[in-house]
Figure 1 (tube, rainbow over the protein chains, first blue to last red):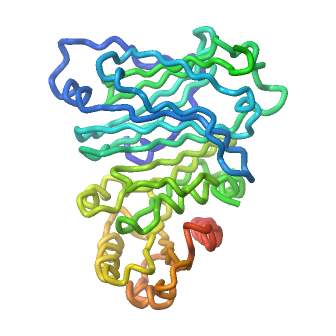
Figure 2: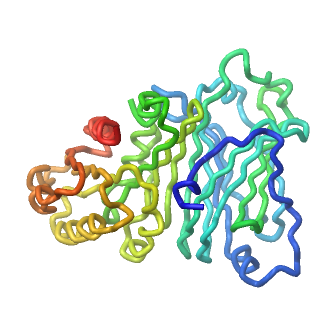
Length: 182
Length: 177
């Protein structure tokens, strides 16, 4: 695969299997080193509707536990206005001590455990001792095609898998609650 | 106007566009990218790796890679060349002391095989500063008139105020057609 092919942010059909998340303790030391040197610094979601400033609606920069527990779950309380946005901006900032060559992210939206969206991005190279940001701006389905916030509340989660090649570095899951429905 | 407008103007046959932003540290790459995305550019810190912005619209992907410009990071730039459709080279027009270094880095980029023929847009940034060199002086200093193997353009701009950025993007759109 060329790098050109490798740098696509593609929406893959919902239901496409993401890599299994079980971490095999017998794996080689390279991936262990990558895991040990990998940090999530922050995640955020914002309204990126064109013609007005991007409005950050959720930001979380407390990810220290991600290091010890790769299946760490978080909860995000988001105002329902985000679900009216024409474009939604999702941002992930991460650091890596180790150099990587086939870094990729799978991001899935799960509604009651069923995949409704699946985004895949292959970054390729990651500079050693670097801090990097991925901003993913996605157009919303549009009025009438959106799942009502009442259905999403407490039933939606964003799952982000960080991988080097086929090996999983860690998984971050964020459960979505809607502020007005709490 | 901004990146979302670019993506709407692209031909239906284009499926993805990869723009690479390079330049010395503190030239304003990230600020320009944030400004073009209607994000608050005031909180920018030095980029210690990459910032990738990917926009998906009607199954089209626009990927803008902004790679840190510090000396220690520059040797890694080469890992991000492949598949580039357009290069944006950002220059701090007020950094007279490093103009030579800035020109040297650009000349090395233009020799790269993986960037051969790739159109280059030079942003003569920070034109809002009093001591900024005019775009023409920067073009002379970077010897842009000697470029024969690709399309190029120099665009005065201020990433801080947003002035000139859109004009640069419009040129990119034209140059890749």
